[in-house]
Amino acid sequence: MATQTQSGILPGYETTYITRSELSDEGLKAIQERLNGVVAQFGGELVLQEDWGKRKLAYPISKETRGHYTYFVYTGKGDVVHEIERNLRLNDQVFRFLSVNLEKEFHIDGFKKARADQQAAAKRREEEREARREERMAAMGGERRPYAPRAQSESSDSSEE
Amino acid sequence: MAYNREDRRDDRREDRMDSGARDGRDEGDDRGSRRSGFARKKVCRFCSDQDFIMDYKDIRMMQSFVSEHGKITPRRISGNCAMHQRKLTSAVKRARNLALVGYVTSGH
Image (cartoon, rainbow over all chains, first blue to last red; front, side, top):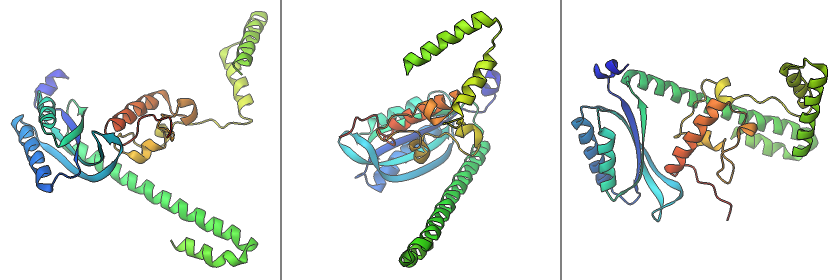
């Protein structure tokens, strides 16, 4: 296995970092470009970059209650993660980050495929949940009808929603 | 409750000494039948549903295994298998680090 990793397949990592919500788009872009430069410097490839947007933090971090999340997946040899984290630490707009080692031998196509499958499954589950909710609403409306004929208009409204 | 359980275990040990051969299977059956009266056997949701994937970025998934105070639900309640519970705890802890899920709070 060790020989295979030396044969050219690089390990994959993912990093999520939170920047201050007041940070401008240009500022964020500058950070992203800097990190991309680091990845390139270590012979890696940026596989995926995702902007989760601004969200409320579950608890305040350094007096911030909101933060802008950015998530990216990359490959690279040696100390990429170390260098990326060093860069993030230097930037005072970034107040939290987390890097995860994904795989020792990272196959980009495989990862993208797995991710697409995962998202499709999540979507399907969401739809199922939606369907179940509607069913429940309909069932509730159906039960209510014989007991309270006046509620009929209400229940028909809720089933439309 | 704890007392009772200990007593029972003691009884059983005596039984085993008396009758000689009383294997673990017997005990298991006994417990199962007693339990089936009021509780259903729980199955690990991650094992039963291949699409249900552990991910520290999936907040919705995480929240179904976390109490309102932010505590991770124990295995005996969530029904997870040991492997998935282990993965779940690390996923929740990662999410906590990123402020996606809160740390344990005792309330306001």
